[in-house]
Image (cartoon, rainbow, N blue to C red; front, side):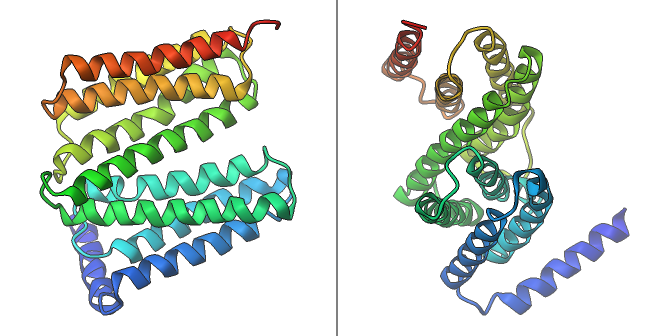
Length: 276
């Protein structure tokens, strides 16, 4: 095992020496263009063959994210810096088959994906550099990362409820989707090289609540988009309150604001049932 680790570390150093002369912004653009073209190509596959591109997108996104961020990746960062780009690539691809398949939708869809990947690459780079939390750059990166957490979870939940599986499947799948997202989000608060026990516990708590919510929602005749919106709101509120608590910024006004958001979404969701 030690020999394998040393071998990988040496390969990483070699890759850094070889690729670091390329400016980071150029690397980001290259990654964005290549992944966008790959996703565009994948959208031409038939639905029954779509699964073939999932491992391709996974590997390509991981390799190209490494190519983009490159320097200074250590321990926990091998997961946290790659999770969002991989997650966005896969859920965007799967979500494509839920929208009308034509060029009129394909072009803006790919454009939205390209913008998202580029933005997430920028945030991953900022987290990798480890800027001070007082710097506006970090605050902007955290906000963008948090926003794409909601985007990714909404798309993933939309796909999940479109499958129309049983309640237990929905509950387990929702928890599995949210746990790594919650870990990544909580990690961005302190940007350490390892996962603290508290982070894993908080992430498991958030995933459990979201999973239980999915179980309940599965018995209510919500449309998939409404069910996804409700679950995303639950994750948004739980993640927001937890990050504020871990960061020592959990005040009464913060709690009230999040509760208002959740209450509003819940009321809207319930109103959609009128006339069902």
